[in-house]
Length: 254
Ligand SMILES: Nc1ncnc2c1ncn2[C@@H]1O[C@H](COP(=O)(O)OP(=O)(O)OP(=O)(O)O)[C@@H](O)[C@H]1O
Image 1 (spheres, rainbow, N blue to C red):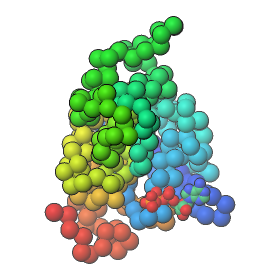
Image 2 (image 1 turned 90 degrees about the vertical axis):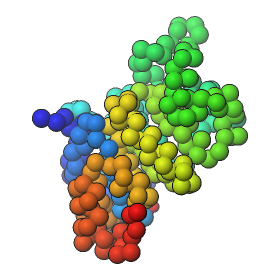
Image 3 (image 1 turned 180 degrees about the vertical axis):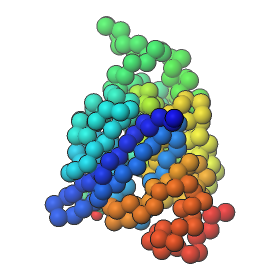
């Protein structure tokens, strides 16, 4: 039997009269790379916000590792092991990459055998920072000011920062947005390595279809807040309702 790590049960979120997310159910398996796609305004980010505790669901339930986390605070959910990366770059521009990673570790306060929080000099072992920098390809940029890094490097740093909290599940909001073609390839490889080398389950929202179709095991399509299809990339690519609502006939997956 495969373990379900994240379970969405009839999750809905309303904003006044607007149903941003309506009755979304899905079981995300441990070790899966799971995509959520759909047109602009479909409710993808809202669904992330509900899972991460930024918004409580209006109805429905979110289970993480079997526990009901619906309506818990974002802090608490982060400490349970759900990390998040953002579409926009969210690093502290004036601080070095290393300081950004260190701060993220301190804020997360998740237990990490390699990270220690001393009573007087709360610190993070340099090894951990270097390890994380290598993982995200920033080993030569650790002492550079984050604001001086390329946009792609800043996004990688954002991923590194999310990893300092040792998540078991990482919610990635448009990891490829704003990246060049070669950086997108690196982002796709990094997403696979998160799962293969670190054992992290990944849920990603993304508009870049070659990336989504290339890395995801399964994909959930939502449209106007409502689930439209759920399946493997090949099923999704040829789903008539998905083509009509989102992909279009002319979409080139090469
Ligand atoms: N805090 C909020 N208050 C009111 N309405 C909101 C709020 N957040 C999102 N919405 C609305 O909910 C709907 C879904 O938005 P959401 O950002 O989740 O879509 P999305 O699928 O992530 O879109 P995109 O692909 O453009 O990022 C939209 O109509 C949006 O205007």
